Length: 272
Image 1 (tube, one colour):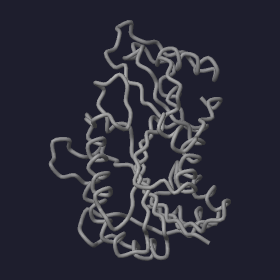
Image 2 (cartoon, one colour; image 1 turned 180 degrees about the horizontal axis):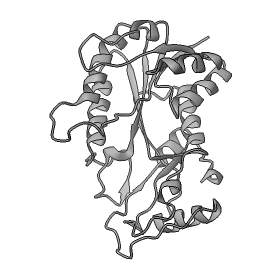
Image 3 (cartoon, one colour; image 1 turned 45 degrees about the vertical axis):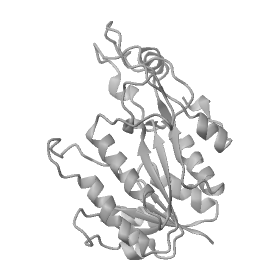
């Protein structure tokens, strides 16, 4: 039985772990909360309390967490809201940097790093994996640096998976936008991906052994923000959001053509 370690059993990692277990994998999963250990264990995940540190060599339980796994999925958000944007300290990058020696000494040979399309700037109308990265947010900048650290390491093979805006049954931006007024960028295209597709794509990467790759993962469905969120509000009986009449310069559409071609993957568009 192949074993996979999932670093970060949160909104995506937890249901992903459950699906992989159903597929016959043995799964080790990490959480930063002691309260969640029993929740992971109850669904068949081998649970570990793992808190990555930006201090070299001090992360606990990592050795055991990685032991005997061939694949590591890294799905931890940068969580930079409390970080001073003017600070030179790249906390998330340091955590990944300090994780790498543990990976090198482990049985892990394949790494899947969950990243974000925020590594691209807003100055392109069409974005593919060939588009030059130009992150504007601090989280985007740190994700890009973390990607490079993993990709440049020759001790294991890394695939980077750049997700668009994440949505699911319990998570949808319309809930936050409902009833708000004068919202910006009414004509900017949406670039979203549903949890179902996130999990399915990760499973396909593993099944097809697509390593040393970079994939954008965004549903090929790009109505304007105003059109999409107004319709979603109507469908879910929420107050309609009101958008500014000022047009936007952001026309970015993220292409997932590579994922559709290389993985022969079809998005489940009825979820959107």
